Image 1 (cartoon, rainbow, N blue to C red):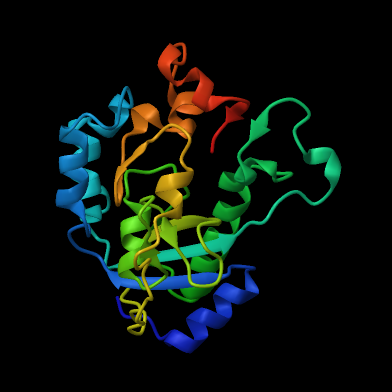
Image 2: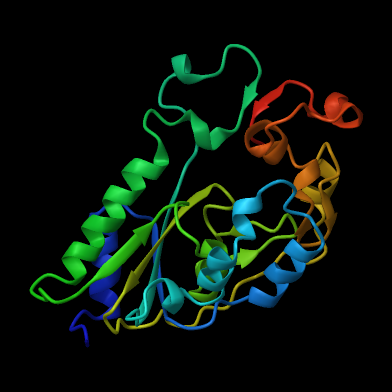
Length: 242
């Protein structure tokens, strides 16, 4: 199914929904899939066994396994800066900046994403889609990079030229052919290694490679057991995320 929406219209619709960025690439094999598979094989995912389920692996490898009719991968993003008022600041312990929102970002970003998809497919009753905000087996960062929304930093996160790493991402699979993001040249990190030097637990073991078993986010959120004694001093007062 071909969409009549132009790239300029798509950008305008995204802004109307309060989204800071939008990108599109044709559905196909996931970018960086081989890198992701090697990362899992090294055991860097720790106890996050849901990442290694056979069904999840095949779906992350190609979103058309998840939605066979998918024609386009739509990626959206919005930046976050901090709390809207001081009462949201944590009183005891340090909490990752992304969790300072008044409402869980999974909910409000999903609403915005679905609203954008609705505007894009308006008048196309037969169009179908699937929308995810950290809730589906899709490699959001890889698709965002492929769509020109940023580049991978040495901390492995997406870096947007204006918003930096402080961005939420959402992905929609559509059975509609949308215009792809115009090619944009990204600056990259160059010789900068500040993120590697700043990581208190040494989780960034090489540029672009994070060992989740040492990561603050994994240790304080995904990990269901006690924090390893050797890492407790480095974790310090962090109680949720990085």
